[in-house]
Amino acid sequence: MNIIDVVEKESMKEKVPQFKIGDLVDVHVKTIEGDKERIQIFNGMVIKRKGSGPRETFTVRRVVQGEGVERIFPVHSPNVADVKVKKSHKTRRAKLYFLRDRKGKGARLKEIRRKEKKTSSVKKKAPAVVAEEPAETTKPAKPKKAAKAPKAKAKATKKKDEK
Image (cartoon, rainbow, N blue to C red; front, top):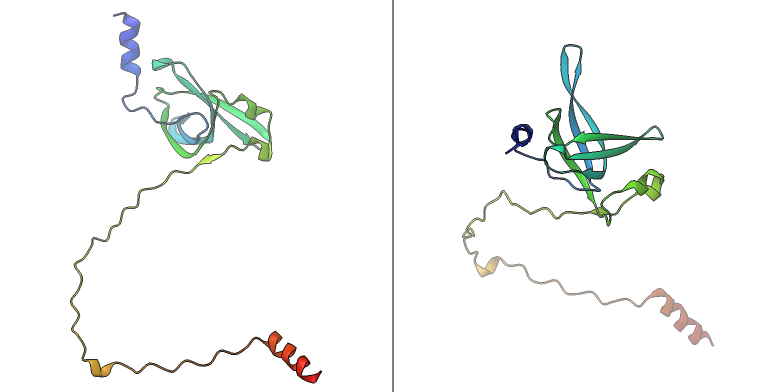
């Protein structure tokens, strides 16, 4: 093995975030301002992934105040704390460069809706035994009222009677 391969393996993350082209993501980036370190969130659409191994990068695009902003992040960088997928979209291409030329509704992609598994926290209970009531307490059924004819038919029959 090369020395370069050994160094590269050490710098790779053990847990790589799972996302693909067309996903709307929040990238949690560590930023250092003076002596303070904080996490800043950059959210947008993943328009490309490039490379493999420790050199793999992805590009995230978003529109801020009418201007398109793209940022390239290394997947295995220690400055990228986390990548959260908010939505997934259906794509037929590996690179979504065509989104650069589109605005508004034209820049939308079809969303993939994932079915969430229904997990019920309520366990199935055994049916409760209810004491039977005597038959004497049941109420007698009420007689049904006669159905009335619609008003339109009633007016038509009155006109025929007058003639």
